[in-house]
Length: 256
Image 1 (cartoon, rainbow, N blue to C red):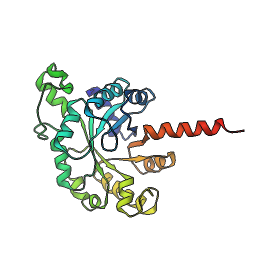
Image 2 (tube, one colour):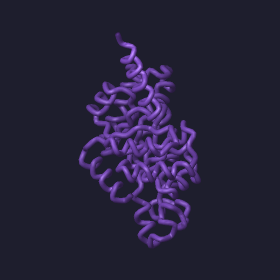
Image 3 (cartoon, rainbow, N blue to C red):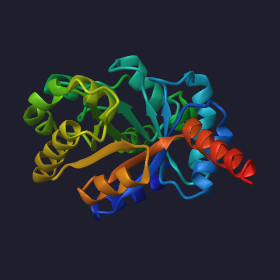
Image 4 (cartoon, rainbow, N blue to C red):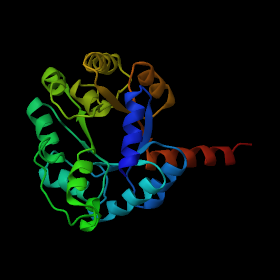
């Protein structure tokens, strides 16, 4: 897993983009397919998806074996949720609704062992090979996992300077849908209000050398944000990708 993390970090550090879908399904087949088809990562969604930590273990196995970095989006900024996601072997945690520097600091604290944080310690977990990994090596390797925080509203933008000053955050992920709601144009992620606010966040983050991510559900929007400097690009959702493919296929079948 750590080799997968290192390669992923090298891509970001060299300025390359990485791509991956959100995964709502709990069937590891979809996480495996994502890796086999060349996606760089898969976000196993526990905020808006039905998956349990027990089921996510198999998704982590499937994604990593197929070469996609398994990231768990936890339901909220919660110490136990972050710790459990990493204990079962996630290569990164993605934390929604981070609005302040204090919350960003807690995200890092929950995800990292001392001296970078104060994550709860247990060696008898999957991430430590159920205690088969030498303890010193485990604690060092565990601190390589990615910490991704989601900025999803105007409060986060107001507090952006403090968030940018927080050490230990690997990716600042802009949530365009929640941002659109906070700007009073719910769902209109292509509106000028949302686009300009996102460009502001990207500009300020890149000036501090930070990696920025976002969600897109169309290729034109992917190209827009890639050209703007976004590197961690989540393209759509497994369910949505499947639905779009089915709709296109059915429409083609009915074409005279």
